[in-house]
Length: 196
Image 1: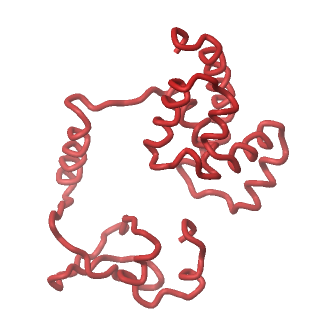
Image 2 (image 1 turned 135 degrees about the vertical axis):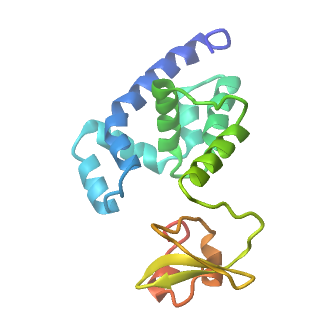
């Protein structure tokens, strides 16, 4: 980076250091449920670092990148890294991801499995099967089974029902939720995108 732009290399050092000061506030939330938004904002408003985080949270990654860096190649490098989280750099609300990605990358490194990314999937399959789990391929889900307000299993298109021992984990586009989950409460269905 310094060969391309010494100014940006120095800015990058400061940018990463800034993100590293925020990591202690971010890391605990990565492994437990988040605070309600009002509580998070009240907590952040209690310190200068927190108020800066609130500012980053409301801006786009591209805005942050353009504020801190000057050379197009440096900007592209950082924007590419952010886009690996499936975020578009110009979307509002993605700015904090720019700070956190660079801080995490430079603090903990970027792990790469030996043999390529496919080896990670193979290792996960081995771990699941070693503990008695089963992986199903080409099994289309008809619906998510719900009992007592909680997902308890899935029903496949062929009628087979698979009940969960501990949890049902998955993701779906919010527009598809009615297709897979019956009897949802209307307040859940009326939430804005991204909040289901």
